[in-house]
Image 1 (cartoon, helix red, strand yellow):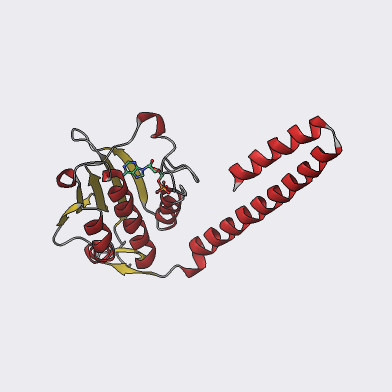
Image 2 (image 1 turned 30 degrees about the vertical axis):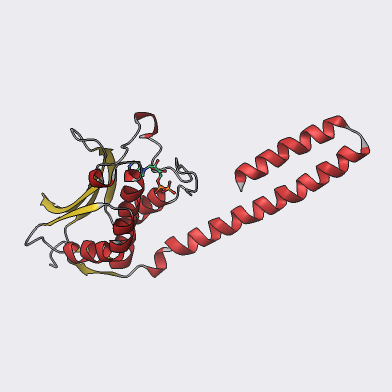
Length: 213
Ligand code: ADP
């Protein structure tokens, strides 16, 4: 909608510069479109705020393998439909973490959806996603490595920006929201190329639950 607002503002300016009475009418129509686009933007932002509102957070002690497995189950149909072959590698005896199960699942679901999207242009048998859980120092790490189109170096710094998308019908909020959710749980979400293979690698690093005194 912001793009629409800016296009109509430009059109209004051109009409007003023309100056004749008909052009003024057209400019007034443009201002109505601008007002509509702005109220649609406000509505989207309100919806997103409700979606990420921290008050709904329910922190509990979690087994990351269970969280990841549930997200994989939620996305099983989407992966089948996208012809993406999943390799799931869950470490045994991971230490527990503390976090909001639903919110962490949302991050995993979003990363799996993005991996499916990134593989869309490949022949079906080359579409792969490797999801792995493992322990590293005081963290439990979940990595998502796909064989998709990979991250364009020019875009690498913008992936997590709100409204950044390279998809025709994308909203560009998935990674931005996922990173805010991760940060609200004391976790880190990062992206890098899936070197030396083609594709992208996303890493969600969650701090291990501290022992009670
Ligand atoms: P959206 O999916 O609506 O585009 P996201 O915030 O989830 O929004 O993603 C932003 C952009 O980051 C995508 O449009 C794409 O360009 C890039 N991206 C995300 N995940 C991947 C991936 N697995 N491989 C390559 N590019 C990706």
